[in-house]
Length: 233
Picture (spheres, rainbow, N blue to C red):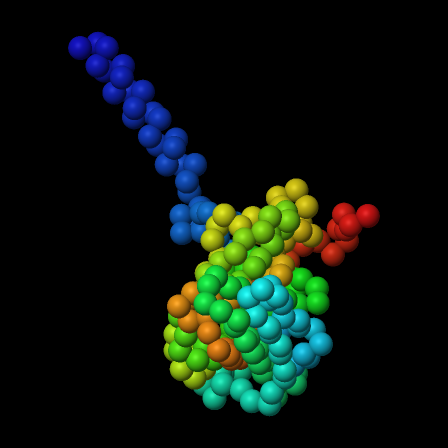
């Protein structure tokens, strides 16, 4: 009985002290240091400059070429943040790619920028407008993370007619931020890959691209100290 009284006294003493330490703290704000985000949609490339892009295909699979055409998806909406900031960029053209297959079999088409396109922040999704011409070919995007690791993500099948916006979320396995070096964040887009369906690798294939966009978290960039040093030497 005496031991029970001692334990009860200790509990009565500890509980009020713990409750007192929580006074003045809003529990709803706990953990916000790791949950703050500033998501923004940005236009990565509008495919206005055909000289920035090039196309490749193994010579034993077929021939591939590209051209710039005037046009745009009618359902494409402007980015509100760009309009609010008064940003006006040319947006009159799309990129057309034509492949002529030699025979049925495995085939790939690479659409590659002249240099990898850097997207800062923590990128959540990538999207691009495509005319797929209702083939069972598959569009993939080729990426590189902050540490130089590459990944190829499937954006979707091209088995639809007219313009369609294909979107892919970026997995958490892509390391987009270095905890030691704040200047090192985001991804680099190295190109697109069209993986052709073997049963449809015949004749000519046409595909068109417009407005590559990203939704990215710019919070890590905004909290970066202005007087920080750049580790790029």
